[in-house]
Image (cartoon, rainbow, N blue to C red; front, side, top):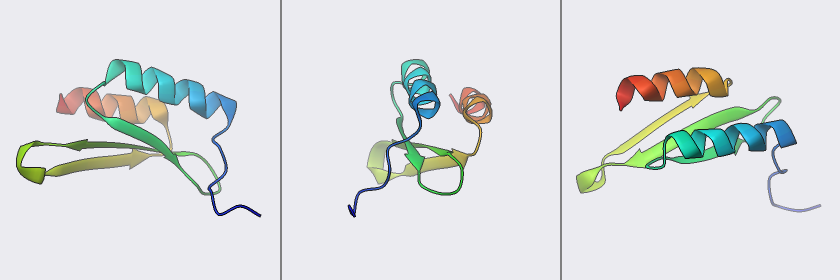
Length: 68
């Protein structure tokens, strides 16, 4: 067995690519678990971290659109 988390499903990878293209200032990842959890992170000046996670890429996009 490997210590690496399993790769996201193909549909999750497509959703990650779409999120990355919409929000290039953020880092995105899929967290391991029973279902995909999409996480977005951005470091602001002076080391302030903004992070949000959702089980829906669509919902995450709506949240980030309200923040930008």
